[in-house]
Image (tube, rainbow, N blue to C red; front, side, top):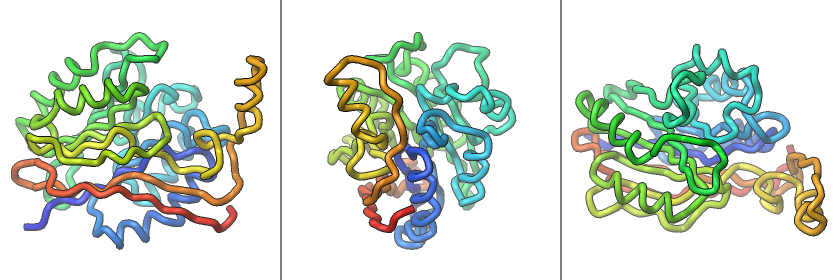
Amino acid sequence: MAGLKILFIGDLVGIVGMTMLKRWLPKLVEQYSVDMVIVNGENIASKGRGIHPKDSDAMFNLGVHVITTGNHVFALKEIYPHLNSTPKLLRPANFPDGVPGKGFVQVEIKGALVTVINLMGRVFFRETLSCPFKKADQIVAAVRLKSPIVLVDFHAEATSEKIAFGLHMDGKISAMVGTHTHVQTADEKILPQGTGYITDLGSSGSVFSCLGMSSGPIIQRFITQLPQTFVVDTEPPYQLTGVCIEVDRTTGKTIDIKRVNVIDEQRI
């Protein structure tokens, strides 16, 4: 039996990210024979920060199976009740108990039970979160009793924390993909014990932007140190980045991992 193929797409930024998902998801699913799609959607809102219920609904309607997030997940209060009522829309599992939403979900894909876990790093973040390493161990110990296929979106700033987390989880999970920095790394690999890994998936937004936002105000912020209003950059060309990972259905180990990087010059 062929392995399960999962497409992970990095942080979608505003209208550009949504447009690229609409344009390219069907093509990528066909090209890579994808069985499951996971997208980080914490920056999909119109201003490039947060996620609105209509945005998550639109992504699910396009064929996304699970949406992960990160530190911007609670930026829009409209999403709070939606997080509680939509189990496939995740927030990091190591947020304090009692906040809206859940940090992991189990989904049946073509006869295989797949667990998706969302966690957030602690280095360079102002949020006070529980240890992602211990939280991951706790969740994985429980979910692997039902299925060996476990995928983690580790939303973190520091590459050192992501690498350490990946090595800590090697052999315990099927794959770990990093998100948050919006810059795709070139270190996709299979770790020694069979866990697929990449430090960061990258993002979907304008190529010549500052992480999806127009560069002008950000440059002025660096030069003047004065507050600026950031806006989503809608100038082409655009990119959509991520990875496609093939996982063995029986062992849960990664068989193959490929970077995905789409460039599109058609204006939205």
